[in-house]
Image 1 (cartoon, rainbow, N blue to C red):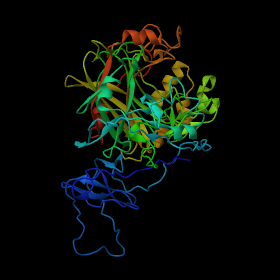
Image 2: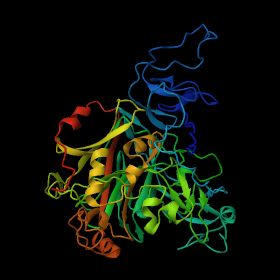
Image 3: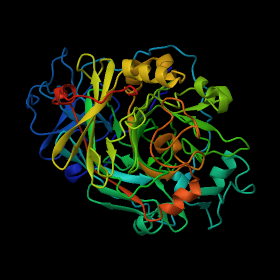
Image 4: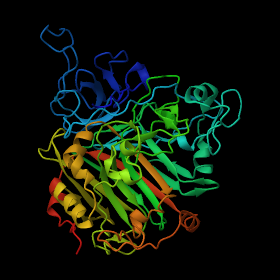
Length: 533
C-alpha cells in the first residue's frame, strides 16, 4: 500500500493571470489558469496534469475547430519532450506510462495509519522569509526557494509570546496534540534571522550553512517549488543530479549532508503552517525528535517516530564522505508502531527501513588516498558531485540497476564509483553485516520507491549519539572487523567536535537535474574497487 502524496497545483500566477514557467496549466479537476506566460506553452503530461513548458508548442491546438468527440480535449503531449520538466511540483520526464503506484518488489502489510490531528497554524509575529534558491532543470532555471525545518522555529501562544516548547512541550499549553494546535502557532523566520540566528546565508544559487551561530547548532533546509507553498518533488530514476559543494572547513565529527527523503509535498489544509514552515520531515532512521508529524504537534510521553525512504547523495566533511541508498518497506511518510517496526536498538534490522543502507565510503573499502585534503578529491577546494540513477532500459520506469558517482574538480572529470546489487551484497558479506538492503529488494525496491517524489534536504549537523564515528572514524569503537575503519578521525565526543568546529560551514551551490546524456562517461571510467584490498 502506497501512502498517497498530495500533488498541489502551482498557484503563483503572473501577468495576465497565466501560469508561470513550470507551473500547472490544466488537467482533471484543475480550476486555475489554462494559459502560460510568454515563451512557454501548456503541455499535457497525463490526464491529471498539464504544465507550462519553455518554448513554442510544436503541436498548437486548432484555433477555430473544437476537438472531435474522439479527441482528448486537453493539450497534446509534446512528442519531442524528452528532457526534465517540472510537472505539478515534480521533476519528471514526459511519459505516457499509466498513472498509478509502482509495482512493489515485496508485498508487506500496510504501515500503521498516521495519526490524524489538528495541524499547527502559522504565526504572524515574524514574516516568513523564503530565500530564493534557483536550480537548473535541463538547462533552464526554476524559481525555487528554501525553507528551514520546523524543529528550528519558535512555537508560541497564539495571543502572546509564551513558549509552547522549551526543551520539551509545555504541559499546560500542550497536554495533547489537539490542545497544543489550538493554543500555539509556528512562527516565521525573518530575512535577518536566517543568518543572524541560524547561520545560513543564501545568495543566488549558493547556500552557506554555518555550524555554530550563538546557541544554535546546525540547520536543515528544504527546497520549495516555484509557488513557495509546496515542496519541490524530484523523480530520480533515469536522472543525473549534480551540485557543487565546499567542505573545506568541516572537521571530524561534523556532517554536511545533501540528500532526499519523501515528504507530503503540499498542504491540504490552508490553515496549517505546512511546507513553507518546514513541517512533515521523516527519514530512514525513523527519528524520535520530530516535533510535528505532518504538521500535527508530536506531543506525548512516547514521541511518534516518522519513517521515510532516504537517498543520501552526500554525507561528508573534509575527511570522509559516503553515498547511501536507504530502502524502506513502504513509500511516503509513515509512522512506526513499536520498537520492532521502528527498528530500535537490537531490532535495527527488523524495522520499516534499512537504517544502515547500502553505503559506499571509499575509505571504508580501503582507498585511503581518494578523498581528503591534498588527495585525489582535494577537500581544500570546492568540487562538483554528479550522481546518476541508471535504469535497465534507460527509461523513467525501468528497474534501477546502478547508481553512479562522478566528480569534477578544477575542470577535470575524476573517476568515481558505483553502487550495484552485486557490489552492495559483496560489501555486506565482507563486513559481516545484516543485508537488510537485499532483504527489502535491493536496487529494484529502491527504484520502486523513487517513483514517489523525493524532497531535497540540505543540512549541517553534529551527532549527539555516535559523534559521526560511523562516517569518519572507527565504528563500533575499538572494532577490528573489516569495514570498521571508516576514516582517520580519532574517537571523541559530540561536544569536542562542536568545540573544534566553531567556525565551520558547508556551502552547496549550482544544483542541477537532467536526463543523463552520457552514461558512458561513468561506465567507461575505471570505477574504484568495491572490496577491501
